[in-house]
Length: 202
Image (cartoon, rainbow, N blue to C red; front, side, top):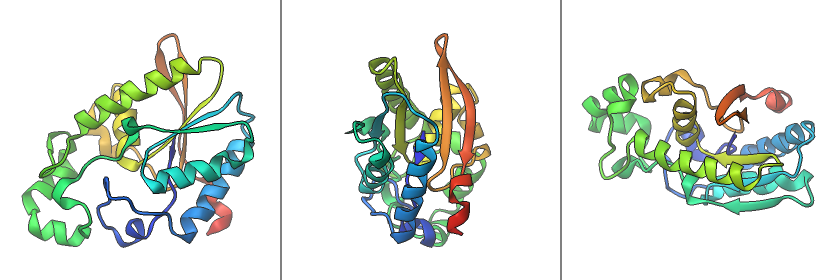
């Protein structure tokens, strides 16, 4: 499970959500580093599943470049959370416009429904449905999901039984790599928020 590379809105701390923001140049370099990291893992019959948003699709296409026979599929199961009215707005502006809701988002994320947007449980529901579908469709191979910070965090909370109150306890940096194994009907976390492959970029 990967997070897409950096965009200009990541750097400027603007709420992205389902706004279709492209990678910046650094994000493309991050995606190339992800490709190298994946190539070192000796993946078997890899299938790449990506959010339909271009920052994830481009990351997936670059990351899959080391695997000539790999297929890249898009899936709305992994579309980023809808922040509703918050999308496209700088973090500092949202703090001023929605001080109470923003405070709850930081302290009790599991209780937040974004104005005209989604909540974390809804996001986790669709992402969980997606991950089970794709791993069962590829039982003898490795499934690589390229999604977003909120998707990855909510899905990890769900799969690990941590509850959405643990959302902020999980790191998900841009172009990070997480690894899970599906054993006996449940997921085991092997690797979380690994960014070692990006060290040479800094």
